[in-house]
Length: 476
Ligand code: 6PG
Image (cartoon, rainbow, N blue to C red):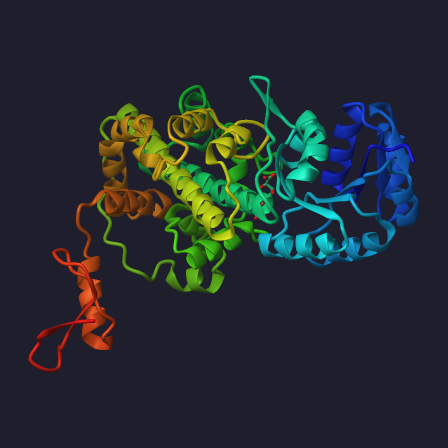
């Protein structure tokens, strides 16, 4: 038994993670359902370091030094359970099983409980950064027991991305905490992508700019506050010409966005927790709308538009308005995502440090951005910040753009350009800062038709009005 860490499941993510471990000097046990993939990894990338290939799961387990540390990188759901069942009889108390896939966190909570009953540690770990991140340094979000992190943490921190020398990996919390924050990371990723897509659409339709011109605008934005991986790759995508047709690449891609489910899970969970993550929800629904083929076919050319002609006298000013609206909407999406993490942390007793989340998302992951430094600083100022938007830096940064944001959302509405994420984020902003909301009328309506009771602004207690009688108020 010589290997320090093992990886089973050698599709591209598993393969690259195994190579990353090897490049950092760890002896890596490798295993895959079909041995050919294991052999090709060793044949193609043996130079990366020391691999110990095994054909059977039993040999793979036997090749690992104890306590064994085994990373599972297979499809979420049934395939993960199948590998775990195969592993359990081969392992010994104290061994650590790491699920590095995009598991749904309730599954992780269940699996952690099951493995604990066998004396095993189960670490549900988010890993973000795609193929390239897995190889060169991902952002890693491990949940599970603190004991397992003491053994595993240094290795994961070693292979993670670094920003200013700080690893993009930290202990997140017990059982499902790691996969939960990875899920919210992906929800934020959806919001970020949708916001960039809306900015693109506004520039394209408002200015009549070409895809390539917008690519240049994004490349310019990427030198300022919006600097991020997603803006950078969007600029690259927009600059690309389809070799087959000579058209802008973006124009030959079918406009129906797909998803594998992490965004949907984020929204489902937010509904359960009662946390308004409107930016993420609108981004997820925007993908669903794009894929609503029969509905779109029934609506195109049929639904009246009554749009005003879009007159933009000052192009530079409009571009700046869109940039500021994008930034403000992005702050809203993150603020909402961090609220969701706080709510889940309280619900499940995870004690997640939101400042640490922002810190490990600065590099390696898909949502990596300069802006995450500002979030990290906000939570350094106040670890229990009730609302990220209300941090002094963000009140300044968003305040600076709020007039632009209103102009962009209003112009989009008048011109018939759909901006679900921009506009719902602005509605959230105005909702959360309102001194008084029409929720008072909702409470009164509920009491009227269902005797659901209400509370008063001037007295403590629960009240009901006899709406069908003489409308006297009763105290309950
Ligand atoms: C990451 C990504 C990764 C995956 C996306 C794609 O953090 O590395 O989020 O997990 O590529 O989740 O998600 P959809 O297919 O749902 O868009």
